[in-house]
Image (cartoon, rainbow, N blue to C red; front, side, top):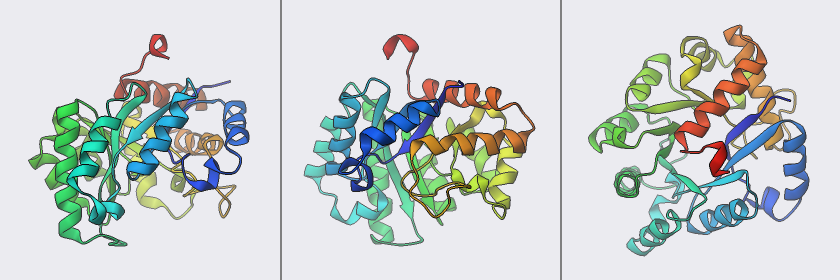
Length: 262
């Protein structure tokens, strides 16, 4: 079976962690999802991400503070994040960025914390995983001003247009496609998938959120990334096997992984 890499999951959330994580991971393996990056949103969830990754050879951790939590960030929290990010199973720093849709943290605070965490990731030499919702211009500007191209990374759950995708690619970022690509009305993401070369694409679930068709309305889980990859293949007119191989290879490269390291 084709090997897939779910580059963005939240396995530490109680939707999985305190319920049926073992069954979820078994279903992922049966679906060919051999690799998963589980992502933190604050110190506590980042610690969980590392704990899960430490217990599973083919699961890796991404640690950072989500923009929703920016108002709670202290110098002590950033010091803790720096220590966590040095763990051997941590492959990137995130998810960090801006969310001007929900505004759970004040915008000026989000931007300040975003900048601080980009600087931290640069000091650590880790690629960064970006959350950008309704803040495209500000996200691009801050990435450029903070020299994020020195580490590159992933634009998680990409929601911009093709022009933005190319701006991000020019800075060393890959474009991660979520389950929304399976939605009939998601024309913008369809255009991005068609126009951006496969060498710059990843697939993700963002589980337990953004469940793809045909499971829309239910809890998302890593096994369902197979439907996202199938939608990408259909839009690009490519064999599923080619999309699976390319997106897995792209993920391994951006995370600095090799078969020998797993």
